[in-house]
Image (tube, rainbow, N blue to C red; front, side, top):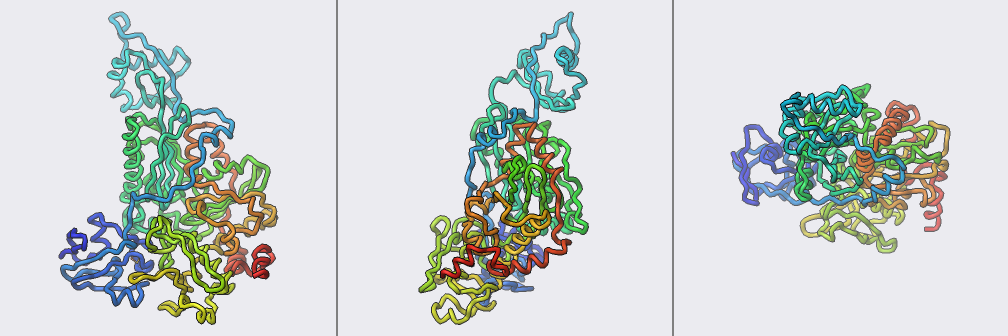
Length: 624
Ligand code: FES
């Protein structure tokens, strides 16, 4: 049995194999946000010819079903079939990604006023060449030279020793030795006067970012960025954990992310003529699940009550263990995690924000695939994970998609005509709506009276515009329509977005209450994560996702996870600071908190049931 694609590619199908799995086996990847459960509706393909057994049609519309669309994960070929994959279902990994606003990292490093001290220490050694009268072994010669400068009891791995003899001779016995505290030898090379290299890695649930850094100058040489290939098994950490544990896919998920890192690394080192083996250290920041998967650790107990990770503080394991293609002896520093759902990416973010150094009370929010928040200052830090889910990245929203080409990213609605004015990433034909577009859309629909405070469509508004109409899932508002596609937000979509924003806002309210403060005591709000770059603060306040604080208190920090990893690559003091942050941070488990449900239910309105918390929105509505 074969599946023929309209592109001409032919792939074989095994007995009882879904179209999604058959495509995956042949490296044709579809968006599979729910990991193949049939609930997200993102893996749709069109059957042009042939018979398929359809188990469920999930979120497909009648129009889609009538046009021959099926869910690839729920459809099993019953003979040869001809299939068309629409653009919106393709998972393009390695494609261009909207890059976060770059910050001057070196300026950031300097602003910490710490000594630049990479993970690997170096010492230059000029050894006397061996002779008949001085015929001790190479290793003893090296130890003798180290002894002379007071470095004792160095450990040498087999890998180090096995290549040492040639290196010493090629270098004319004039060498640089790299070692880590212990002490343990990492590399030996001809005397180095020039650059030394390291990499800072951010493993996000959605994206993987690698910075190639000159360790001598702290200069960022290159940035590599791609989608996390683990997305083939779902959008959120839970679907990945399920695949790793129930699906036996731990090694597969691990190899996906390691191969993403290695691919980025290969491109960057080649572009700059740097030998991969010359990369002497690495730092890694990621959420707790991503960090576990990166190191090949079973993430199973992260998901099961009482939600316990294997470890939070990672030893300095080696690049060879991680299977990263640099010197296998290179140490890999992992940013410490806090709890199952607050990881090293957040510790990294707090470090980069510097909130832990200031007496001002600040709120750090990372609104990515999930929502993590930290409240505090130089004396205390509280953190929580908000279980917002990945809806702002498109999951659970019928026409939701990531912020890539073809995504509606901004919306204005004319209050008179109720006609939308949309901005699409890349000025392309619209294919869906991304997180910032959703926030814009809902706040505009609210301000123009298309939806009410509960996020329900105001029925009589449909007399004013054809765009508000009865769809298969109830009322919906159409933002874009052409002969093939109709992009709308339904009441179900709006409810999902309200749930996500309510979880974030309730988390913030609860943390603030827990420490006995009020929202207006927050002097700074730092917004991190890729999504943060495109967020319109005004609209997010109207939505009730962000607290109604003076706008100048908000700042966008971009990808703070990789920024913190960069800082730790270059400074021992900052590695210690990261560990201090982790030990100081008190984790609050919102799911068992008594007040959470109340806060959450109050935040399920636009912007909130208690309008006194949103004075500027109240004013706006009264003026409208
Ligand atoms: S519906 Fe098929 S992957 Fe989600």
